[in-house]
Length: 123
Length: 108
Figure 1 (spheres, rainbow over the protein chains, first blue to last red):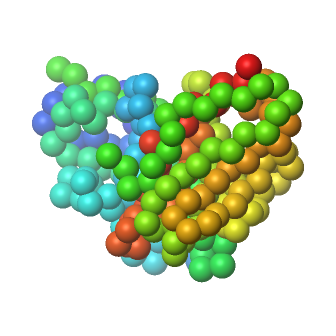
Figure 2 (cartoon, chains in turn green, orange; figure 1 turned 45 degrees about the horizontal axis):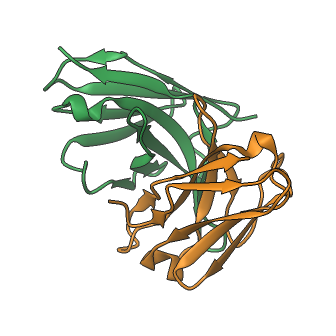
Figure 3 (tube, rainbow over the protein chains, first blue to last red; figure 1 turned 90 degrees about the horizontal axis):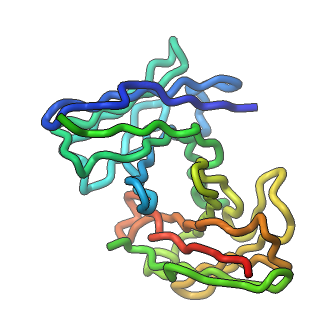
């Protein structure tokens, strides 16, 4: 059974960089079949796709966040990470990592999710 | 505002059938996937592709699509189906992905 677990600071100061890591167990992030994605949810609000990265390096970011986001993969640790710089209070949210399947026949879906981690931006 | 539009709230009587809709131009070209989120929990995939359910998802959940609208139908709604439901698909450019604003389902 695939499992994903987010980790990182729960409190980040305004203007600093938010850094999160997702550790994957029960499967390899090097698999050619999958993207690995990040989704966030501000308190009391809906889901927002942040970005998805393919094992080979192709990366897609939400246009509204693209200038501040970087996603990377560490295949040696079976982890992928998110960096969001110049954060403000508006970036306060629960951040989820997820496996992202993108196919022509079956469309796209996020089939496995981490439990989520709350990141608060405050001084 | 999201490129995928959902009604904010829908209600259904226990045991009855309810459909939750998602509208967007991209849905003319791409399938939607659907997620259930109970309070305090991570979302769970319930429908993907034309009408596919992951292992462990009740067959009370089904999906369909027509034109620019995708629908999630729950047949014989149960109390445990009370949750927020989100659709997801590509955006109108086809180069990125987007979630709908979510629908809060209340089972009466």
